[in-house]
Length: 295
Length: 268
Ligand SMILES: Nc1ncnc2c1ncn2[C@@H]1O[C@H](COP(=O)(O)OP(=O)(O)O)[C@@H](O)[C@H]1O
Ligand SMILES: [Mg+2]
Image (cartoon, rainbow over all chains, first blue to last red; front, side, top):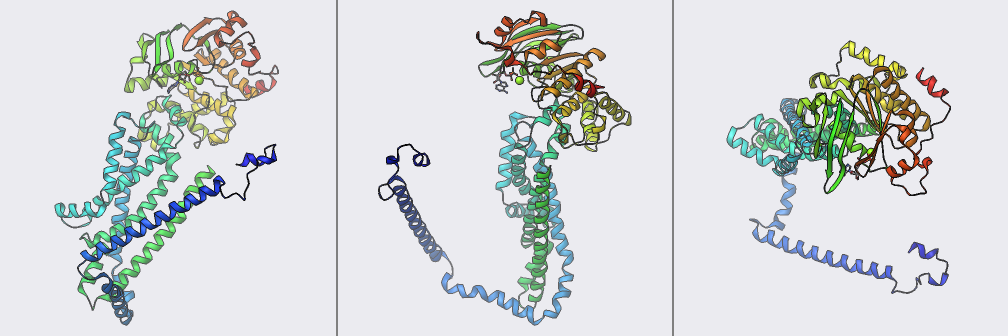
């Protein structure tokens, strides 16, 4: 359309007052599609809600006001015993550290596996190019398994404790990070690797000198993001029986009234920790990727 | 010493190098010319084993180096250095480390990870850099250097390998004329002083005429000329480059300036 405005014959310029103009028609068509899509979406929502409503044990709508009841119960008791909260918060610090430890160890283990899987499945770097699809599918499978499900299976097999939690999170992490690592490695410049290969360097030497310096900022940034996620996962896993702050929270909540000040204390330190980790990891990641731009 | 026998490389149905045969004895300075896509890079990459050959043999000192695998193959690569058009250094590492990469083949992966090098090797790397006139740049990151300096770092890495053959794949194609001359003079000097065999892909005729003892011409993967620079007349060149009567030598020229004073100071 733009060229038309500069055409030598001014008569050929489009008549904007004509409603039949191609652009106007296109806009109308888009509007019709949009309306249809919205209608279909609303219909799906309505039927979906109906299904949920009929299958639910209690009535969803009449249960709705109850949603606020539990937190307000917890909060009012927590407020009444607010003098206990700082002491309780200190009391739960060791559990918090256990949760963070589980997250850190599993992120590291998962990250190492992810790095190996990524290098084995990146074209141009893989030592066994024919096995690239095998390693790719392996990562897909590891990523597809939710960590909570792996944890439940491992608890069943190994019993409770931090080891099944670490294994569960590490397994999911290696698949999730492996894909991201591999994408970063695919964009790496292969000229240094080729130069190193021409001197007779081994695979490990080529990767260490030629690839890792290039991908390190990106990989570290992804690793930090995973650590953030894994802190939450590690806390949740406490609920299904793997120790740490989540387990304390579950006990306190099941106890019911009388322990709600503990729930408040746990919630506060967990919230505070997650905010601190998110903020510092944000800051670190911006620094890492900005540093990469500077060279 | 070096016998290339019916070496072929096919990419799909296309032959990038087709039944190439030639021998080089002693320490010649051989130029390979031909237009883009003639198969020059593929030929050199097969010698260094960066690319596998489809058929044929390359025999060096009685061994078919195309049959080597694993550690033997890497040992061969360390004896047969390669210089690239785009330098192929590790850009974020310092110049001296890049030169030390020439001895990676005899270093363990663990020692590489901790970046520890024997003092004698570090001194040798610095001596080589000094010989090429870039000793002062040793602590700088490779990416901070000009193209001509980076290519000399690449040559230093090749010398660190103490190789029997130096392969150079269009070493001056991305350099300005002045730096091109410094780099070609450096390669020629290494050949003259150390007696190392040099095989260089050159995309320009005048460079080949000026620096080589022998020129091999390639066209569409085949070797169509093999002789001295004197035998490389305009009509022969026209055949190699597949040009018509309007063929003009200056079209394949890097126009290295007659004034060599700059180059001499750089190499002094
Ligand atoms: N990795 C590759 N895959 C497919 N074709 C290739 C590959 N490398 C080179 N070729 C082809 O082989 C031919 C010769 O290439 P090359 O050796 O790079 O020529 P030159 O170095 O003389 O310009 C070209 O037609 C090129 O397209
Ligand atoms: Mg080439």
